[in-house]
Each structure stands twice: as C-alpha cells, then as structure tokens.
Length: 528
Image (cartoon, rainbow, N blue to C red):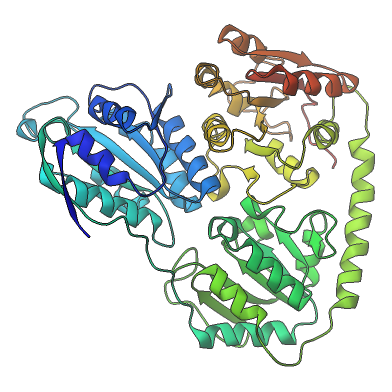
C-alpha cells in the first residue's frame, strides 16, 4: 500500500530506502549531499565517510554482494561522480545491486555556469541499470524506489539517481510506493529439459560455477545438482568454496586439464570468458539469471549449445530433478582426481620453497595456515591475485572478492572496508600487488577511523606483474608501504625472508588494527 511521507528531500530519500535492509551509506564529504547524511543518521543508518568516491562505491558493492541486498553510495556532484565511474562500471560488470545517489546543482542554475555543471546521467547511463534525475520533491519516493528495484532486478547492477540541491534540501511531501522485490524469472522448461538431456548424455562433464550462484542464493541448489548428477565442480569468484575442499566433486588445480578433455561444460552464473580458458570444443550449457547477462542477445540453442535464463535456484533445482538414463561419471571423476592430486603435489614443492628473495607461492603457503575457513579474501592486482587463486582454497562461498571481469586495480581497500562492515565477525585479508596498494593505500585512514582491523598483504616485487614487465619508468623496489599505514594510525612491517612470514602473519591478525605486511617477493614469474 502506498503512503505519503513529508520532510526535507534527504529525509524522503532515506525513507524510500527503508524496507530493503540497507544499514549503512558510504560517502565522502561533499556540500551537495549533507541532507542525505543527516537523514541517514536520524534513521540510525551508519554513515561511513571515506576519502575517495570510488572507495564508497567499491565498499557498497562488497556489502551488496556479501549480504545479497542493495548497497548504498552517496556522492557529491561533478568530480564526485566522475571519480566513481570506474567503480560503478565494476559493479555493472559484477552484477552488484549498488544504488548511487548523487548531488547536482539546483535546477534553477542549470545552464547558467553553476559549479559543477555536468550531466552525470549521460556519463553513467551505459554502465547502470537505470540513470535518472529527480526533478521534483514529490517524486523522490517513487524515483528512489525505482532505482532500488532496477538495481535488484536480474541481471542485477548499479542504479544511479541525481538529486539536485533544491530537491534534496527543500521540504515537501512525497508518495512512498511499497518496498517490493522483483519476482524471480521463471526459466523456459524446454530449455531446462534440453540442458538436462545434454548433461544426461555427457560422459566427461564439468561445472564451472561463478559469482551469480552465490549472489542468487543458489549454492544449495548447485550442490544438489552436482551431487545428483555426479559432476565435478570448479568454483570462481564468490562461488569458490561452494563445495568445500575435500568434497569428492570439488576441484581447483586441474581446471585446464578438465576443460581440455571435457565433452560438456556447464557454465553457471558467469560468462565463459578468458578466465575459463578461452572456451573449449565441448558442448556448452550456459545458465544465467536473466538475459543477456554475458550471453548473446539471440543465443543459440542447438545440439551443442543450450542457453538457459532464469532464477538460478529454479534452474538448478529443475536440472537436478531431470529424469532419464544418465551416463556414469565414476571413471571421469577418478581421472580428474588423479590430475588434481598430481597438480597439488607439484604445487607443494613451490609452496615449500624457502629461497630468497621470497617466492610468491611461499607466501600463499603461509596464508593457507593463517587463514581460517571464516576469512574473507580480497584480491586486488594482477598476477598476485591470479597466483592466489591458484594456491588458496576457500573455506566457504561468499569469501572471495576481486575485480572480476572488469579487473579494476585499486578496488581492494574499498572491498575490504565494505567486507569488514558487512561481516564484522569474520577476519578480512586483502591480497594486493604493490601497484594496487601504492595507488590506494591512503584509504587505510578510513579503516583506522572506523576501527576495522583489516590485514593487508602486499606482494611487493617492484615491477608490473610477477613476470617482471617494466613500464615507462621502473618502479622503486622495496617501497616501505607499511610506514604509510603506520603514519595513518595503523601498523605494519616489511617481510624479507620466508621464515619471517608465519610470525608476521600472526602479529598482523592479532593486532586488531589495520595492518600491512610488505612482503618483498622475487621480481620475476613464479614458476608455480
């Protein structure tokens, strides 16, 4: 039932957000939006001030994905919005329901040189689910609720709403629509049946599960489907850990060999991009939560490819219920288990390598021991993150955050901040390349100010990537990034030898303050 609410525009905007579980707003200081800040505090929402606009959006994305509900960022006008475009784009690629409210010059000053005079909507329109400007106080409730629904509608993503100063600061009355949720998308039964038939006939099937399986709350349905069909599972992104390490169908280290030999690959909740090996010659089942979600606008459905769009819980449960003769996969599972064990045995030698300078694999060996199953791992960088994905197991789904398909370097501090607020009972560990860390380390001050004891582990090789590539200027080796963190109120230390890793990690997690381990690793490719 609709209701009428009255107050200043900021109060009306916050009232329109009620009913969606939003408990915090991430924001830098800015003169265009304090009316929203004041209203959020009055509504007992936590106002989390950060130093940079992209951090606000990255943190909101982390909350949105981990808590499976909207995240909220509030930005100032002009550069406040353009500073955040990369982060909004990352949320777009990652399908994160982030609501971005931004200030804007008053309507009566549009076109007359008001600062900053910029059409935000035109800039962010291509990377948001919706982008609009609220032009009347009476429309705030409807416009804000529309933005929330757009962000939550599969395939989820960011939604943007401009609030001009003479709208957000002025008093008035607005209609507040019900706080509804978008209905689940029902999959096409015929497409599900075709997918089931392909899976039933496959002798060497593989499941690659992506982040949308987690954000779509389909982890239990994935397990049911995999266990019913006896299909090996590789998790990526937030779906890492969907089947715990030790589960007979959980695999990590032999993905390349599995994809090369599979006769069917079921890609669930992610795009079959280069991170999955660049495609295979196998038959393909591609399951997404809504079209197009990384699939072509007019997807092929033939004897070799089945494309299914719909609520992932419904699709996977329906596939698990498929009846008929099924191929036996025992020999295939055993073959992959041998390949997995062989790969891990080879990996063990690299993980135990005590040579100096520190090999990056040796760092991950110590992280394996230091990180509990409850830990949330945040990756930010290039080869440092890809190496971590090769070497680290994840204890439970929803525990791995990285830049995803957009690969935005510098996201780590924002993701870590959001993760620490979303899951205060879980340790948060950021794994950063030295480039990613150097470009964002000042945001540690926000972690200090909000008492968030995030541990940051920097793989510092003084070069671009562990392949030792060099840019126009060689980077300064051995940057003392921990001194910056200490100056901002945190703590840290440099780790130069393998034997220093374990005690340093222990000190970091016991410190209860933002702590940076500056790990000096070899400036060349890790042979693992």
